Length: 169
Picture 1 (tube, one colour):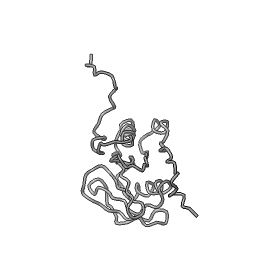
Picture 2: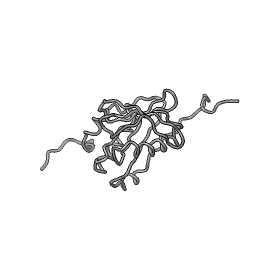
Picture 3: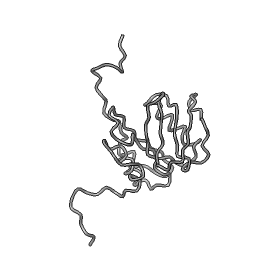
Picture 4: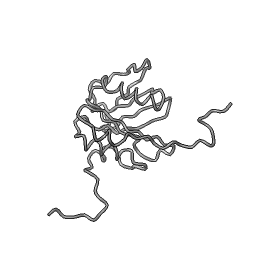
């Protein structure tokens, strides 16, 4: 009997991204997630999340449920203590206990742990970010080989064209 996950002929599936139409229809009060899973882990970020508020008990359960569908059981979530309101030490999500850790890091990310040691780092787009800026930041966060930290991505303006810079008229 062989384990399907250990087959030497396993062909990685391409990342499944939300279609652009979903992002173009984003309105206030929408939470979106883009997640890139790779074997290489060359990027600093594995995805991006745009919560509707800073309320942990309202926002974290739907995120955990969505991630669990694709990644399996989530055991821990690390949050920036300065960015969230009232972080409990654990939540029960879909009959599973998820431990919450809080750190005063101010790094615009949330750290997701699957199992004992598999970590995924998601950039957190602030809830009050305008839809187009949020969409652009989320797309940048999942570019393969991305070496930018979340704060850099969130502060960046619209992407520049590849052509020569032009002075405003």
